Length: 216
Image (cartoon, rainbow, N blue to C red):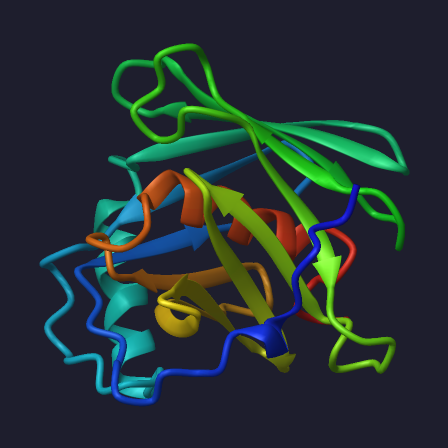
């Protein structure tokens, strides 16, 4: 059933700014049919992230990703049908399954990220539901809960999505994603102290390919 909370229940804490500790280039991850790659750029992008995505930051990220393309952190394979798609994320080095994404394209129902037993990324499956009001912008929020803490993806800013974590009854920004490369690639930055990288990546991919895709 839908989550019983709303983004407006958690006022934005404007005193907390996003300080990314990790940067990922999601190559070919938008509306892909078969495979895609997730490249870890953490510590390699020279341009600073100053609160939002500058052209210089995005261009630098793409150049670094091009050099690292043969050594991705994770790989994704896709299968499914018109109403649902199953995507599997694996560790690109070991080949071990990291999680499965069971996604819906329809306006009702939920999408789910399922993790193997004893996963270090989450002790339970993560379910995404649309939340908010009935207006076009309000409806472009997706919520999930990890380890009893609510999170919101805010897709009301067009080509930039913002990930919020709810702490002390307030929202704080812990991640941000922006499209790049003819709408097939995206750059994701996160505060890895506040959100697990695979949880952020998997829920982001659901947004990029599901009901409220960024080009909607």
